[in-house]
Length: 212
Image (cartoon, rainbow, N blue to C red):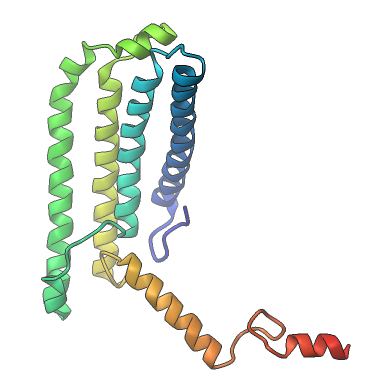
């Protein structure tokens, strides 16, 4: 996953890279576990007792770690039919207000999850515990909500601060609009003949090859 442009590096940039790789590795391992589960059930007719619980637990962790990455890049889906009607300071204030609501929501989610941890710590994941012989607890899965929520709070605040400082121009990106702008830029470059000589868009390249 590429590092977001315009955002701060340092500790937060390092955390971003670590979490990105954790999501990638987690997705790969989750796919492997699901493959083992399907193969054991239908090919070997000997289903495993741990694969389903492990895949679900990994899915929760991958999801909760991917959420803050999307927030840091401003790539979560948003309903902008109201904000598009405003511009300047009003639109900026609305964007900051939305970021504040995000922080508040994740803070409440963290607090509620922490309150559930004592009860979850007394429950075991039976499949994983029986399959691997370790005391896998439900609280291990709940911890993903706390970690992902905390990262979401930090990254939301970071993006809001940089947006206020003018380091980034928008608090929430529109991936479709970004793709359209990129394609329009490439078309403009083609029409103005700014492609590299001899590149794929240079029609004279074959003729020069023949002359050589």
